[in-house]
Image 1: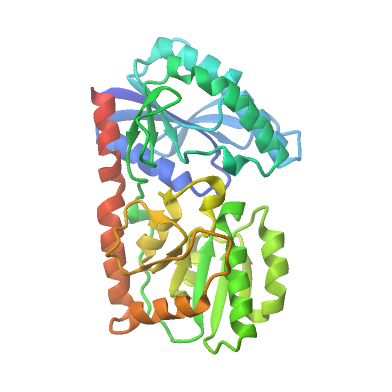
Image 2: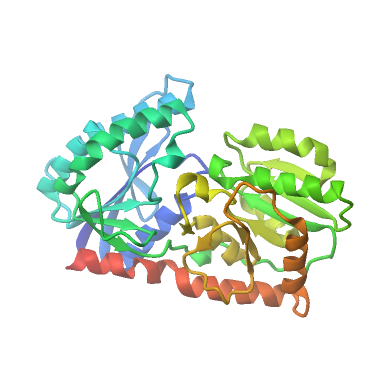
Length: 382
């Protein structure tokens, strides 16, 4: 059996880390393709190796001594890189798949050692380009500045870059394999209840970053009601991030029409989805230079079976798909009359469950994890 090493620089104890389930799903697909997969992640301050989702080995355990999350994450990654280099001694893999998290001298040193024990290295870029979205915070700007210097050397060690954004034959002078962003639909149930009519509940689930642009929706709601709008909307903002305070402040004038739900997952989030007729993906990706989106969130909304609102094209959705409202990719407030009309079109002559089944079937057919990773598996088998 071929051996595959999967490296991800995330903390498996962070239940709100959005791609946690995706990483495990990717590993399952690789296993189904005939690989024995060792997944290296962090568990708090520990560096751990997982196989089939279970921790098989703790490479190094430490006591977390720093309270600041951002500083601690930098140190934890640095420790993980060092732990991996020691772990790789006297081991050999047939391939390595790495989820990218900035380049620095430590990462290049790891890649250099990987080259000695692994004949093929693939690097997944979850977002590209990523420079503009990492300029808001000082720490991100510092990490990006280092990355911009050292990523020029990635081509010495990486065979292929896997990305979800087309139009690039090479990135950092490395050949590109473009695949859709995959999702394991077995991990998320479709909605099961019909809608109860107005108010029209709308959900937005995110890490609340600048490119989500939910202030556009809040400003649109305020204008709509100031102008005498009669339809009742309730916006549920789910998540916690650096834009939370701004959204909370803007929402005050809208009273009970906006609910700051905070972080949610599992059964409470599923219950909220049952009430919501539509989901908002991102409304300001133009701020980070993205014009075609391959977001995990569009797959999650698709799995739930709810119509979507977005400000840019979604890679797997054609122009004839009736359940996506694409709003302008600019800074203008969202036109709530258009949102109301979109809601009416979606449910004019179909039940909510019929619409949900159509959405889920369409999105799953284009972004199921097995289909999207098939090209990656072939790359490892070359």
